[in-house]
Image (cartoon, rainbow, N blue to C red):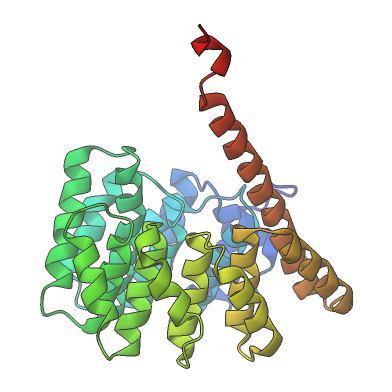
Length: 327
């Protein structure tokens, strides 16, 4: 619930005034937006300067990443058919937590029919959400199959390579028999972009068959491949990757890769990881952003360790009681 109720006309006036910033308290007015203000926004939308629209949507996406209590699903749905490609892309990103499979036909149509490459690529990525849901039987099986069929057709088709790579990444969640062959063939290409997408799909699969490929790629000279491999090592929870990632952190110049290595280590776990994180925390005491990120990684590490204990207890509970078999 908003701490301060702002008349929605005041919000619309602000959007029309390019000279003013958009304060955070105004962003909250778009969360769980009701039909009447949403309609007023859509009527005003054509008069808002294009850059201003993108600024608003970027701010809303950033807020959604920070605050799990806000939801911009209704706004995202309303803007999926906007005339501007960059608005359609940002609208999809507002829906990244939405698991309503009624969005699937819209995304499939955008993937196969939208005239903009970046929009088609984003739609492929969004369909990956529903491939994963289908693997857990959280959407109807026929819908799951349709999504996989469309992604496979795009991957094997003639669309722009970036769209096809996003289709491959989305299929990383799939257990379809043909997917591993496609991942392997993409990994074996000489193109680093295809290799990175293949490794990204390997991580999503959580299939240990890919562990050797990922470990070799952690030390790749290509930063795109290295980043994908570092992330995949965490998704695969590869214990063998732990020393490689700790060593990588000593020399890695790319901040994105270093951040991914820290997060992957929090997914893998280990006492040496905890010690490293605490030592690093002492060194970063003056950097608020890095300290906050490292604290999140420590929280995730604790979760990883708790899950490991739970798994061990579950295994013990499954073991037969030897006394039951005594004569």
